[in-house]
Image 1: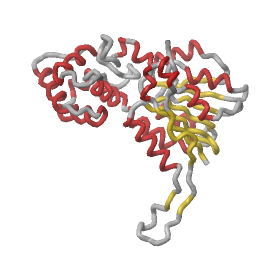
Image 2 (image 1 turned 120 degrees about the vertical axis):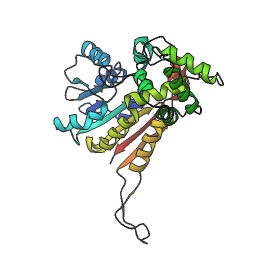
Image 3 (image 1 turned 90 degrees about the vertical axis):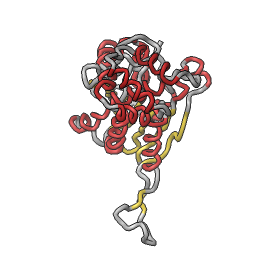
Image 4 (image 1 turned 180 degrees about the horizontal axis):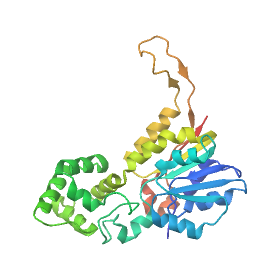
Length: 306
């Protein structure tokens, strides 16, 4: 069964208006979109984005509301889409449920999970970019170590990267998720509750899909896309993306100083904040954790454009 993490909290944060225009930047299997559509009237509109062809196909099959549309593109394309459709400054709410979706994790053929035998792929859009297998083969040990360290916060990044490249030089290969997971287990052993491949798989997935760049891109344009009193509701799942989201929201909710003036001047002109906090931090309830353990690391933050 598919669970939408922090469903009620994230949609409450949007403060849905029946005639509003909303964007679900991460459609997945439409859990959040379905609830938003139920709250919209005939004049309301919901636009969803997803780069995964399976998600787009699901939307086209299961969502046929006249006020709903699905865009096969990453949410970093949101600004371009809104420009083309005259929606800049007219969107009442943007929802982002970051990270990998449950269907992607659950389908072994997508290659996201080390607990399921599948090809070592990890692309959210399998028609574009390079797979995790190709990343291991094409990048140097230093480049791989940087990926494991920066995107997975893996303490044994260098040892794992060096061992992977040595293994490949012997003519061996990593064709499946289990091949890589077992190799990492043998390389560094099991030293904690988490599987030792957890951080490497996270790092590869983030790199393959350029996930942090996607977040930076959408945050840069979110303010311009939103209408006055429009809300930005974001669910994160690990510290790297949450740090980016939190810093953006903290900056937008703070008074804006004139950065063109020298800092040592005794009087610095300050401008009003551009956004205000609605939800600084919310986590899954005990009831939700009982139903869906994957929500344990989820964090919700919401701001409103002033």
